[in-house]
Amino acid sequence: MKKIITVLLVTFVLLITGTQTLFAQWVKTNGPIGQYVFTLAVNGGNLFAGSDRGVFLSTDDGATWDSITNGMTYGFRCAALGVNKGYIFAGTFGGGIYRSSDNGNHWTAINTGLSNIGYLVTSFAFIDTNIFAGEYYGGGVFVSSDNGDDWIPMDQGLTHDTVNALAVNGTNIFAGTDSGVYLSTNYGMNWTPINEGLTYRYIQSLAVLDSNLFVGTYSEGIFRSTNYGENWSSPQKGLSDTDRYVYAMTIIGTNIFVGTHGGGVILSTDSGANWHTVNVGLNYFKDINALSIKGNYLFAGDNYGNVWRRPLSEMTTAVNKQSQNGMPLLALQKNFPNPFTTTTTITFSLPESEPVTLRVYNSIGEEITTLINGNLAEGTHNVIFHGENLQSGIYFYRLTAGENVLNGEMAIVK
Image 1: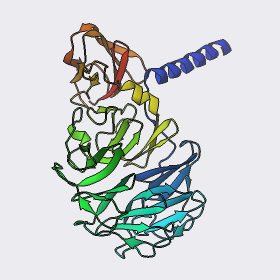
Image 2: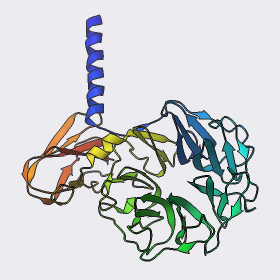
Image 3: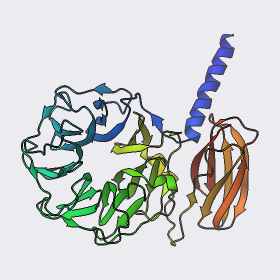
Image 4: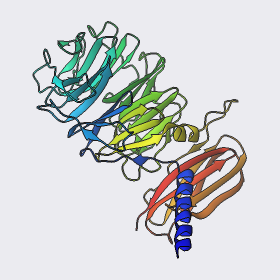
């Protein structure tokens, strides 16, 4: 009996290990830490999360979380976090701004000079010792040059002063509002609208990559400027309707990660020309409010109080780089419809003729069927998957084209 139990245990371990190797995916950290996670920030080995229940700290990549609200006497709903010069800044809805010099163990309110509209702080940005804070519902932009002890309004030229996002590039600071994007080149003293070609101007998020400026909008996806906002285009290749509510952006190297409401996390490795979903493991938790990079992990905060973690290499290597001869990217689209009851269509594009396999697996890594196994021509291919005889649940599909592998996830609901 002992030998049988040992064999079963080893088999179980091998099965779990094989499944984890087969399906690189998001893992939910221990939580939840509220009903909504609005913001994430990193300071050394510390990961901070702002939620509707205040600020939480993890020192072990999300294995454990501690509530750190000592000194936050009002406004526990933390909508913004920032790190600069050894200080942690927390922007709240109702309590203004708090500052900590000891990694969140103690907080001090620093609201001198802020507007009296309720201290609704949405975002932070930093240039040297200058701290910029964006406020919601009429607050505009405030600047402090003394670590937040005093704040001065700096909104000359902001025709609409609801600020949802801030970003900096050198000495340029960009403000995303619900009437477009504004630029200041003099530390916020004056602002100039930079909206040429920006056909939808309710801005939720901002990110800068070299001379490329990206904005995420409330319902029209992503816009990109290659010249610091002088004009804009809408690079939507690879995006679906559920990817168009863009709430978060973060960049590492040439990789741009975007958090959406409904579409989960999407990634571009080519400066926004093409986008790919990287959602395996998120299941139905695809309303992403916040993204942050710590070490080798990307962390995502969702609309359900969860923080998710995934190794960066799993996503950046799965999304294949453009071939040297300029051919288009290998791309695997979301199956449609999803969820589905009987049939769904899987769509993918090949940059060249090559051997291809497309297989479907269940949630524990067992192969269900092979849909394609052979050479295919370059171009777009549509494959119908029949799930009439399968039970409700999560299934995965894996596209292998040459040496490249892409994964997708689908749900059967009956």
